Image (cartoon, rainbow, N blue to C red; front, top):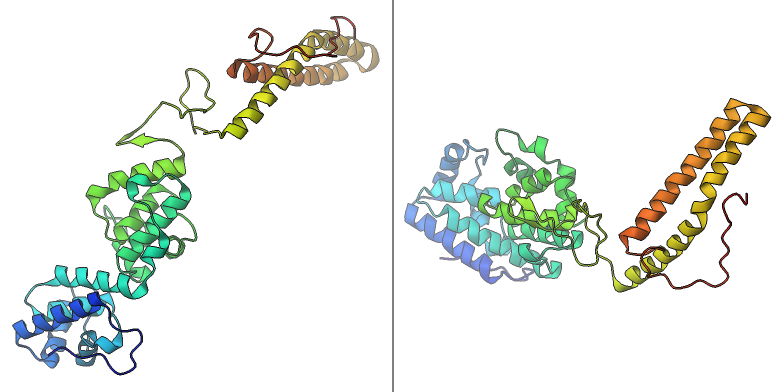
Length: 327
């Protein structure tokens, strides 16, 4: 007979919690064992993976609706002590009951993994993965994060689990992210889609399975012949501001260029007359720095299809250009 919720229990048991208890009670009936016998069995069935033994009192609380949703360890010990199977179904019902009782999953508004585009999307999706896993203990997530012989405490610090689960931050690397997902029960066959989401949100590039697309996003500034890293998506306002800046840089480059040769000659002459070789070197260093700036300005204007040779610059009234040799 299923236990009934106690008077004044808060909150009332949810639909999934009731389904979990019904399933566990049915397993006990099939086993034909008393709680004392189940407690005795838990000493041996739980020792292999660290589940541990539980008392008869704890086992009774597992199926008591007034006690709230039990912890995962107690549910696992209960099912294994019954010895009639049903563990996978029990854990699925337990996760649903935890999600129902915590009531946080809907508030995250997490996008589907294929719809993740930003770091905020990724943070919400990872927190949702933790909630769908039943919000297990942080140490349990860390232990399940182990992979290829590397222990979970090496791959995934508890502080990272805490920040990620509470949407306070993201894992530092994809390996940490994958470890967190394993700890939340995400299967290996879904990891490829999660890695693509990581690439989109964190690495800042559009990715497909196993490779990155070299095609830049519309409106991105990319040097020809080079793969963008990262691709920058400009809003119309930013792009208009950039075009205005590029026009100003083109005018500046046109004005500065005739002066660099004259400045180089002047620096050499002053260095020789006044202080010798040291001042000459300092003057040349300043001229070289100015020349490097000029090359950068010219590259920027060419990149945007602007400059005196492009024919796109409007005439500028009142602009004064010094002739070579004017000093």
